[in-house]
Length: 305
Image (cartoon, helix red, strand yellow):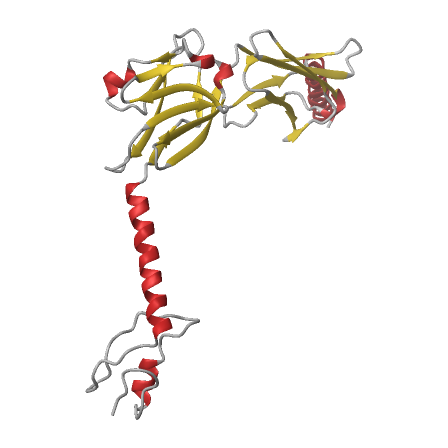
């Protein structure tokens, strides 16, 4: 016999396990019957716990499905400005989903937390702030998406964090990504020469007019030289030039020997290398005379014998 309200009576082991499978500490969604037994009720606290859990998850699903949210933010990690060429527009895109009941939609683009573009359905898009003259406000007509912006003639100072922000009367969402503008070098030099006393090899390596800041190294015998003099300048256009100078004792060099200069731009994968072969004419002339003397000595010994 089963009691359906309160403590059950005369349940076998399997029925008791099934009955008590939902506790206050660990609610389980198990409302089946035991074999050959009628459905019996769970304790009231257990049933309330299950209902509250289901309602909570259902409410969250409804909120998420009806909220505005960004699904994809397209901001390149780097953008290289090729020299002697008109730069292509810098195109950014913010894809989003909007719930059917959401009202009062607004989309904004921010650069380093400063508003640069806003789109409202009734007003359409307009640029503002430091990029007011840079953003092509007609791009929406061409692309068909209010999240697309096109920046004309991008420059080095447009490096920074770009944020897409969407909102309605009911919800908001935002995503950010950093963009690094790269300006390649106008010149990259590597020179070597003997000093006045012919005891050291002077090495000069220079990179000019790059962005961001370069890191420059001289490499000899597969090792980066630490004892170098470094000069760094930044011009009025924001571009960097860097020069390193060092001396290598001539006795450490075997002529000919390679000397390498390499640089990379901080925070990027942009790298360049230059290599030159140091050739000491005096050393090689001396080696030739030594070789001739050895050959003549061997010939003299052969004739005398």
